[in-house]
Amino acid sequence: MKPYNQLNIGLFGIGLDTYWPQFEGLKDRLEGYLTEVHHKLANHDANIVNLGLIDNPHKAFDAGHQFRQADVDIIFLHVTTYALSSTVLPVVQRAKVPVIILNLAPEEAIDYEWFNKLNDRTRMMTVLNSFSRNLKLIRIVR
Image (tube, rainbow, N blue to C red; front, side):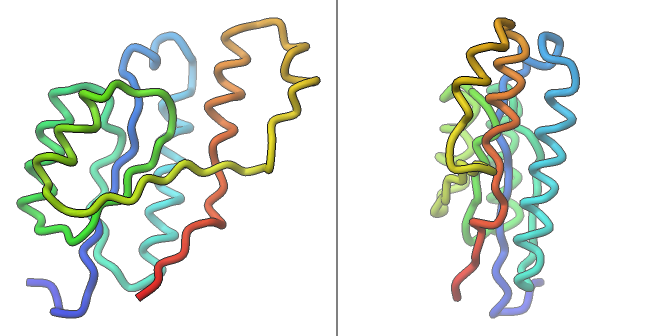
């Protein structure tokens, strides 16, 4: 049983399982970003229920059930890359708690002049996926 004043936070990231074979290293990098978010949240004396990357509908239904079983008070959804609504909605609908959506970026803007010179869609996608990070934005207010 958790202490009455300890926040029980659910955390998950979203992705698309068909991306993993297409973009080498992408899943590992996104899981790393999610781990960083976990550590930032844990610094605020909260219990974190981290379900990792949810990347298909089956995992989404399971995650919603796991969050309900864990009695989370709130969920942080980290938008790590493109995902289908079927990997998000079942989690949120089954958990039945408020959700904060994190869409984080490490810089103010993408350097489009450099980006457009890449001329390689796979590299462009990798850059776009790695762009959405800036964990400095996370702050828990009680």
